[in-house]
Length: 337
View (spheres, rainbow, N blue to C red):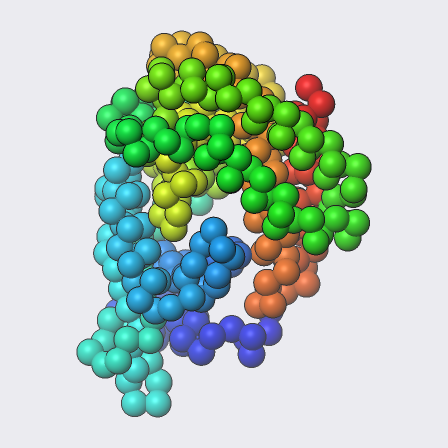
């Protein structure tokens, strides 16, 4: 990666001397919206000054607010992981972490989790079991039962509200059609399926009446789960309420889709059937495939956004395009099921 393309404060934070604690090695991981620095026993996450419409981190004030929201919302499921808000300040011609000068950027500090126990790595080693999924379910069932679900939140379960999120994806990705990740036939097939399903307004109302529209996690897939004791489900959506105010089925569909994506279809089936039984929600099966399709498309879109980020190097960009291609194929599979 070419450091010239990185913000100067991120270059500063890539130096061991920038931290008040020991750092044997500092690693930078990027997403389409964040710079994440792995530094010793801590993780520092900084928001990129981007505006995608559905997400707006364009000003320092907004980034500070959403850092505060990230701490508040993620402490619902893993309070010990999210430590505090931090800042980078001016120090003469340089910078200082949590200094007393002018604030250049706000971020959050987290406890670093053991990488070998990240769900993705456990899955890659072929070590993921039904016991792991049971632990996740045992956390999720009471979480959803206790999550807010007032009348204002219920509105987000209506077909017209769900359509805003689903159809937005097609608007934001049509410019990528024919560029290697998705072709026109795939795009049209997935869009047509989604539009047809959204016409079943009574089905969405049934989910509202069942009390299944809650203040959920919003981004629950294997990269955001660490199989520690207790299991840690982190990095929920803090930047847009309409992605988090959703059907519980949409939330768990994300993880079920991710298991399918990684070739763990039997574990995916077990996860959904066990969750439906323990949460006494058999009705979720009627909307599950639709939400799996939606979630797979979201992952593809995010991969394309990351691939087209100018601060991301060519190797990562190519990898993201390949991931997007696979997620589009999976979305099409759900659409034709």
